[in-house]
Image (cartoon, rainbow, N blue to C red; front, side, top):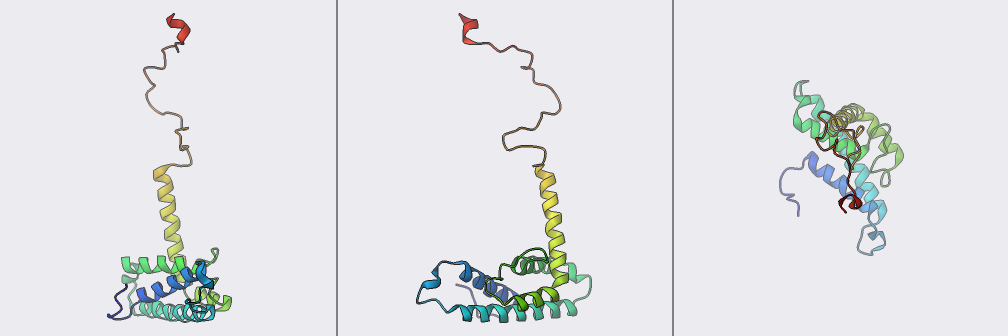
Length: 162
């Protein structure tokens, strides 16, 4: 169970939105103990609006140097996961009104853009490190460097030994 005795934070709003996404994608929608979908929709929309307002206020109060800190980067990445970028669909599109979702994306466009650029950069770095473009999983990449000393040996068959 989450400790909710402390001060409410942006993390609590992110957690509420992740719950809304999980609820909308779960198969237990027909269960009598689950809340109706219109309540989940309402929670998602209000939590999104509040999260958007809080993020914009936090950014406005910070100076330009502290906007690039690790906490801001993590929050931006979580916002990208929740709301997606201009080209991605949102994980909350099943629970939120499209107009509300587009309005939030418009207001958070700087944060979402910054996170999507960082994600692309991380993806490029990962691809360069693993070099998946030039090698197959089974070692189809041509060997570079020194040749094997066993290459010059001819292949022997069982008939050669008789």
